[in-house]
Every structure is written in structure tokens, then in C-alpha cells.
Image (tube, rainbow, N blue to C red):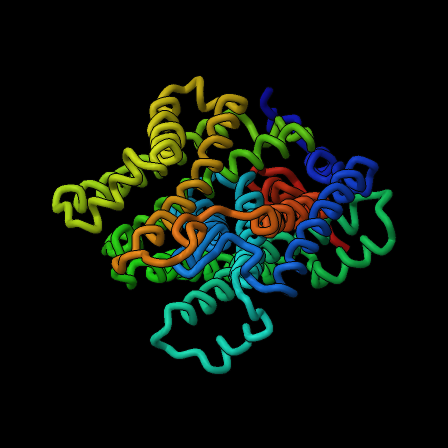
Length: 442
């Protein structure tokens, strides 16, 4: 089903894109379930806070466990805002209009929670301020914190600016909203009246943000990759980690956007706005970035495999045929090679097939981060002697797993709140793009 532009009116667009803005029973149940789950996870964190990181599977040799794997994944998924809004937007891809807010919502949610993931890995989180007070420019950790905050602020502004016009429209046009919600929309709309001067300021500001977002987004994952690459250890000692991490981030982010598109399309009845064309194009984007990422995966293993120094040989043997082999091959074949082959065919770029593919890709993306972080630390240069067995082999504990789940719950809560109280698809921009006569503000 497609939308006939000739029969469109502004009231029709407004109704279609705002009918979900209400507090209903389903929303309350969903948020209740997430809240209960989050409380359970926060209780697990309170145990870690009281007794120390010993409750996790982290030991002297594997000092980075699920928490750092999670951090790398969250930073990766947040990069999709740059790919969709900045890269595709700046080169003039008009089809991305209904997708931009979904991508920016995901970017804001994942970037906001990424910093909290780092805190979960700290034994003394009250000392976090020391990073800013005593941080040294030579430290990649200081760079990481700086670019994450910068990227989050830019993404938040990029989400907010196009919402100004939408909130003004909702405040004036949408009935049966709670008074408190209308007051919030009015305040946040900044007295927008749709005059040319205001539109020019907003358009120019958005373009500046899009340009700034590109280096900020590239920096956030490049700096994260440097946290590994500056360490001279087999599996991390690589000069390609910057672009390797960035391309992998695009894969995870594109999969996350496709999953969100599918559920928003079904739950909010947006079939006329998120059409099969959008899924087809996002499928092509996912296939393209996956092929780039596959190239870097081949590079990551082919070069050390050719030289086969002793430490690299041990590391690769564990990945290819050792205890990590099952996870490694499932990630490479099931999460990268097969999706590329499937997405070549148009049938698999339709909504339901591409949803299944994207879920598999996103899960594989998380396990890929696990494979980047953990196996390298299990093969130190120094011999392991006279230590307990659980110091040699990493195994996540229940408490550690619950703390790792908490950020996912927070991301779902943020995405739910943003998508529930604001149009998932840009309202004002859609009307302008369709040439529909829109509301005249008083």
C-alpha cells in the first residue's frame, strides 16, 4: 500500500503521524515491565558497588569483560545517526526523510547510555570526575569521554531542531492531549510560527550540525578503537582498527534502524510513510556497509595469519579452531556473509525478511564485540602460573550479565518515550516535501 500524494491533506498527515501520541494501557504495561526489569538489574549493580568487581567474572588477566564489550557495541549503534542523517542527507538522498528521526532517536539513546556502561566497569565510580579534573591529553580515555559527550550533544540538537516545527503543529492542531503535555510542546516549540526567517535559521543550523556530526561520529569510534590498538597485544595490535570499527558500527546501526522501522511501521500504522521502498533502500545500505566490514574482517585475520608470529598464531588458532571457534564462525558466516548474500536479492529486502536478517546481524554484532575484547586478554605475553583456574578463563557471572542487560533496558525506555510523545516521522518536513499546504500559524 502506498500513499497517494494527490489525496493528501495536512490534517491527514498530522492525524497519521500523531495518533499514537497518547498514554494508553499498552504503553503503561510495556514501561512497567521495563521498569521492573531495570530495578532488578540495578539491584545487581548495587551488589557490585558494595562488594566490588569481584562479583563479576573479571580477573587479573581478563580485565575487560562484558562491560567493555557492551560499551563498544553501544558506541557502534549510536553511529547510525551520522550515516543516515549526515552522510545520506548531505548527498541529497530524499528517501531518508521518514527515517532520519528514527536514526537520530537510536543515536541519542545509545550515546546517552554508552557513558553509563563505562561507569558499570568502574570499581570506584565516584572517581569518574577525576577523568575531567586530572585527565591528561595523552590519554585515549580522556579523548573517548570528550568525543562521546560531543557526539551526544550534537545528536540531541539534531533530534530537537526538526522537532520545533512539529511541536508547534501538535500544540495547535492535535486535540485530546493532556494540558501538561500541550504546555511542554508550547515551551519546546520556542514560539515557532513558520515564517521564512525562522525556517532559514533552523535549516542552516541543521546543516551546520550535520557537517559537524561527521567528524564527531568518526572520532567517537576511532578513539574507541585506539583504546585497543595502542596496546601491543595479539588481536589488538593493528593499524586498521579505526576504519574497521567505524564500518562495523555502520552495520550494527543500520540493522538497529531497520528493526525500529519495522516495529514503528506496524505498531503506529505507518505503512503509507515507511514503505517497502524504504526497507529496500535500507537493505542496500546494510549490504553495502556489510561488504566494507567484510573486507576489514579479511584484512584483520589475513595479514597476521600470513606473518603468523607466535602470539598471533595462538590467538588465531583459538578463534578458528579453539574454544571461541563456534561463536567466531557463527558471527562471521551467520552475521555477515549470509546476510550479504541474502540482501543481494530483492525479496530479502522486503519488511519481514529484512527484519529477521537485521535481528541476526545485530545479535552477531554484539558477539563480535565480545570476540574483539575477550580472547585477546586470555592470551597474555607473560605465562600464566600459580593462579586459580578461574583467573585463566573468563566466564561472566549472573550479576555481571544482569548489569550488562541494564543498558539495553535503558535504551528501550528512551526510544519508547521519544517515539511515544513525538512524531516518529518528521511531520512538518514530510508536508513540505509532499507539497501539501500546511497549517497557518496564528
